[in-house]
Length: 320
Ligand SMILES: NC(=O)c1ccc[n+]([C@@H]2O[C@H](COP(=O)([O-])OP(=O)(O)OC[C@H]3O[C@@H](n4cnc5c(N)ncnc54)[C@H](OP(=O)(O)O)[C@@H]3O)[C@@H](O)[C@H]2O)c1
Picture 1 (tube, rainbow, N blue to C red):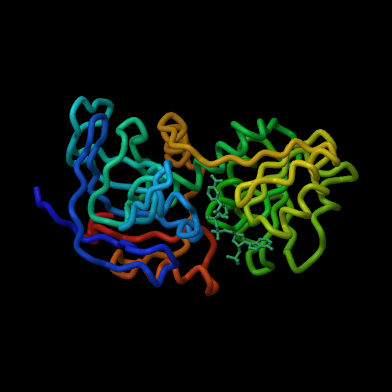
Picture 2 (cartoon, rainbow, N blue to C red; picture 1 turned 180 degrees about the vertical axis):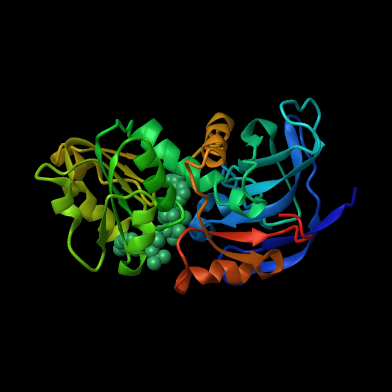
């Protein structure tokens, strides 16, 4: 086994300008962990703004840091006492935010956070799922407890997370309205939204009927979150992903508002893989970059790009 690998790393806190493609030590799998050879890794544009990208949970600097917390790859090593996965298993997973990510040839993570990847799609498509689809599932099922027939508003329905919220909300029986840029209308309706409101067009209030939506999942934050309280019916559930809600505002309107941070969950990943293999959940790939161009991948957040997740191709040996 080689001792060094190529990785995308940042040595000081900042934005994409801090990212360098360089040689780094291959990480060692600890107890209960697996060493995964990365085939593809998805990025979240906002992750360079998260404290956990730069600091340990107890506040210590953890640079140099490796971004990208969604991995699809092959298990190539096991730490002491590791069970549940085996060498050569093709797996996917969400990597905790306070540890190095998958923008590298190898990554370690707890074997308990890995699931068999969907077999019907490529590693690149698989990498679009772990963080984004788990967030969507946990928002709708664990936090909003969506019931069939309920009216759901998804803000940012063409985004990395939003495109899975729309699909899963529809497949769980919700009546889905989504917002986004006007150019994204056909794409978002194709994911299963019944109604689309462009953010430069009419308010989605009409689509909710007089009462407001039963469930609102806000993936945008800012002014869009501000407007979301009033679009949720009294007694309805508002789940915010970009920022914690204003508890006072929610209470004044009788809205149950929740913020959460997605957590790895192998059982849910196995279920999502099955949905993909059954043709009930479509991976949404925006664009790909080779690992060495990872900085450009992060910079692409600010220029128009297709809907969905941006993926780094790490093992470009012709295998999908
Ligand atoms: N709490 C958690 O566990 C968790 C997990 C994952 C992500 N997040 C957060 O969730 C947010 C979304 O993440 P993401 O990866 O989905 O980001 P993303 O891929 O950039 O998606 C955001 C989407 O919102 C759209 N948008 C921007 N402004 C809008 C507006 N005014 N109205 C309607 N749509 C608008 C964007 O369109 P354009 O691209 O055209 O601007 C894009 O399609 C980020 O803040 C991220 O940090 C939280």
